[in-house]
Image (cartoon, rainbow, N blue to C red; front, side, top):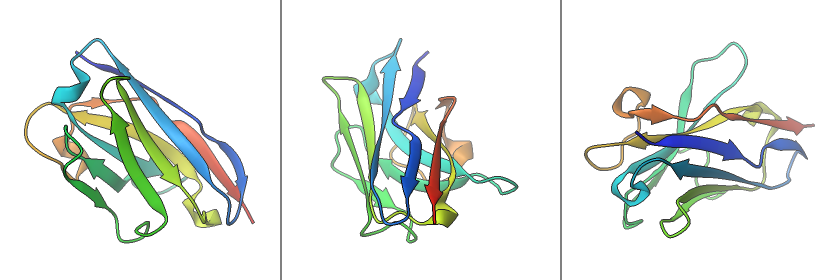
Length: 124
């Protein structure tokens, strides 16, 4: 079973950038499709980005296309989310997730393992 730990969250001004990391342990990271989700206060968790095990396929939510980039380094067992031009409404807890079977997915029910999340606060 893989364990996921996010890092890199914090406070950023509107229009700024952050890079989140998700380090995996206890499993074979390169076999998992991975995703990023976020949950704002009082709202449901929403899909942000996903990447296939070999990085050949990547998918971003429409709301972040052109501003966010998802990537992974299988040699380092780490997933990344580069965020730029951030908006105050993107303040949320950002979580990474791993999918044990199949390709990339955009719904949380399709993922098997989750990290605890890291807080991102975008100030106006």
